[in-house]
Image (cartoon, rainbow, N blue to C red):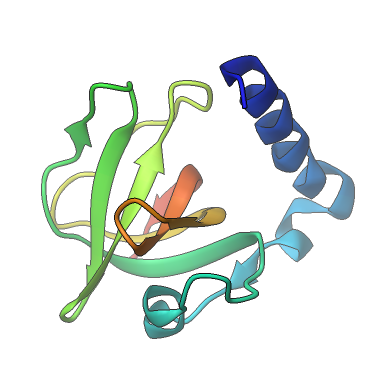
Length: 122
């Protein structure tokens, strides 16, 4: 898939919450359920999860920014993409993170990619 086709698909997927009523279209997911879901598991596309930012966000060669979100010993990656620029959270913050559920076959792990929004939690 070309980058232009991928971006068009991404913009279509991102538009869904605007039509469905944004608050109703995101599923609150339990952190352990998201992290342990196997490849091919049926998950909600738009989801939110709460955790702690475990390390300083890291910018990758492809322009994405990786954020390591953890709850206890379980961790997952949140990815901020240049096409949806949002500020990265800081290490140590507890956040409520919302975005698209994605299984990274290369790294064999579940991710929130892209991260669409986040807010700090007490």
